[in-house]
Image (cartoon, rainbow, N blue to C red; front, side, top):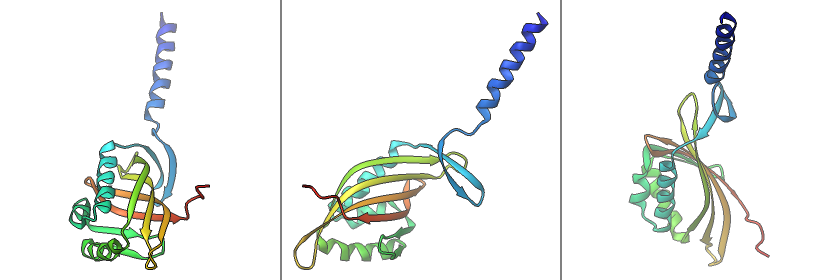
Amino acid sequence: MKKYILLFSILLVSCNENVNEPQGAGYWIGGDGTEKYVIASDELTDTYSNWVEAHNNKDIDAILSLETDSIRIALSNGNVIEGKDAHAEALSNYFTTDPNWNMYWALPYKAVSKGEEWIIAGQYVTNTSAEGEEVAVQRMIDAQFVDGLLNWIIVYDKEPPSQD
């Protein structure tokens, strides 16, 4: 009987060791060590989708309502927009190009140990140039949320593949 109790104890301890290992996948090596990530709530996807739709509707107030007061947007051209007032001004200029965003995927994710919430999303964006020509980009956005609002947005643009 003592043999079985010992065997059971060893199995129980070995199972508990796996429970204490951090769950998640991927990594980010930062100042506090390596971070892992898990899938986050689709509430983030809904918020982001509403933010994209507000761009299509050219609704500056709706866009700003989905952002923190300290919103920071790092654009693909190297410019950085900081704060809601600066973003509202940039949007007024941007909307003169008649942008249309067509989101084709999104993945919300959450840091295991720090709890930071992010989304990475892809969309095709078309604008009208000053010469009246349609210009298209494939836009990837990595965005951090704080209290359910967009707080930090990193934009990556590239020329979309040929549709031939």
